[in-house]
Image (cartoon, rainbow, N blue to C red; front, side, top):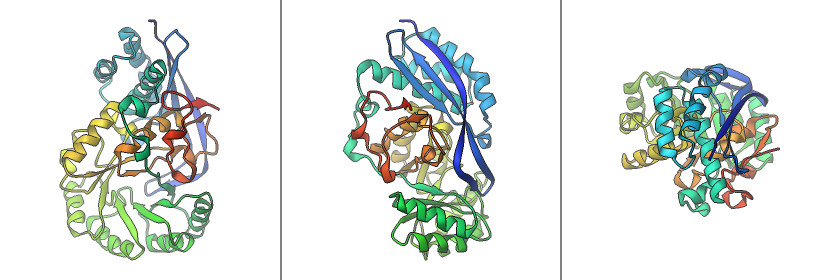
Length: 346
């Protein structure tokens, strides 16, 4: 076998400017990786780097030649565990870059075996779940309009970004537009511990399901305080980056929110899911704003999850790749019409 590799950078405009408590984004820069086996099979993966975790499209492009050289040196895509170990040896950090390679390899292997990724893992597609759809911070009126549009498109589970001095106004507007929706809230580290406890009490009055990352990741005892005082379940996102973080947050949060772009690959994500379960935690898989080049792979983990927040491609004005059907947020693994992750160029 002779593996060949390539990558390209793409700019993906968003449908709406996307604001969270610490930043606003109008364009997502992803890097697409392709790995071919010389026998007509090609795997596709994507990196969606986040500056919050020390990565940009520039850093991804800088390290990918070395990562892909390691893949070509092993020259057997089925040696997934061995390759991912080599990738970590080559680049210890840069999780999004490593993740793009991991996804492309899994896609390629499944194409070679004529299996969907969930079949390769032995998962039950009927155990798939619904993804939430995110409403970014804006004026209350614009958030009401975005919510109405999401409901019209069939989304019944919404994740609302907060962490402002207008949080109750925001929740009131969202609830008015979506009285029957399941609503989750994400503060993206936007509150102090005591402020978070007060906010959670308010959110409970609006029927919120759980609250994500209420306090800064650098304040683990603050997170513990909020969880102990909270009337709602607490999810850890920025506090939960790698496998080693699971035991650290197990007594400070109820839900571990994993992201492929934080942990560095599909196999590491599966390890984190099982570790979280072993520590008595529920599990959510989230995403950055990213193309189906990476989202498609993430959806195959849905049967292992309690919650999914895999709407990254749904927030784009257009995506150069199609993936797993997600009408109204329903992750339909059984509708995949090709092996691998289900990704294909539009």
